[in-house]
Amino acid sequence: MFTSAVTGSVGARRRRLSTKSSLLGLACGLMIAVASPAQAQFRDPQAAIKYRSAAMVMLGAHFGRLAPVAKKEVPFDQEKVQADVEVVKMLADLPWRAYAPGYEGGEARGDIWTDRKGFEKVTMEFKAAVRQLDEATQAGDLDAFRVAFGKVGQSCKACHDDFRVKK
Ligand code: HEC
Image (cartoon, rainbow, N blue to C red; front, side):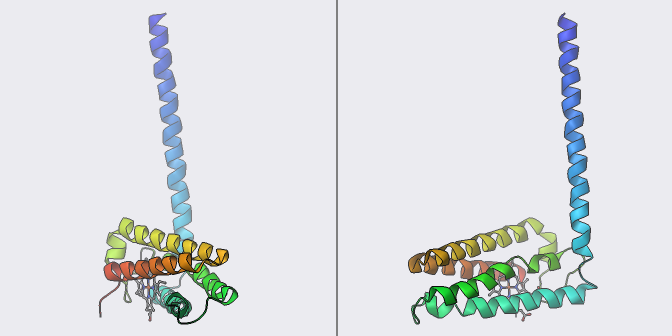
């Protein structure tokens, strides 16, 4: 009775362990499956550098147009602001795959590839700030818009400070 209870629980633990390790195997497989198309997205590092720099230039242009609104130099025209926010939102998802392993170079610091966690953290913070900017704009809330604009600007700067080559 006692032995069978013990062996029973050992058996259950073995089963749990094997489920765990097969899930782990599945997760690793998925990671590889997700990583390889990202790798294959660009012909060579130069193409990746060009792509992400172009996305950054566009971000600069459309985010920059929001600055006079945030500074209250021009009125908050919700429709016009939303049009630029939509572009910023779309662009906020684009550059990161072009920083996959193998695409080192340009004005990107090597830290992007050696401090992956740090780079992903600032990327997530940036994207969260952009979501906040979108919500504030959709709500037509100028005060919230100004706060979110500041947060996005800070997250551009935070990433540039740590991961962009200083000129
Ligand atoms: C998570 C990191 C990160 C965030 C967030 C980020 N950038 Fe960048 N940015 C970079 C890196 C790295 C470069 C250097 C270009 C490269 O990758 O070769 C760069 C370059 C640029 C450039 C120069 C592009 C060129 O080649 O002429 C501009 C402009 C720019 N960023 C604007 C922005 C703006 C505006 C924001 C925020 C709305 C922003 N970036 C957010 C990492 C970031």
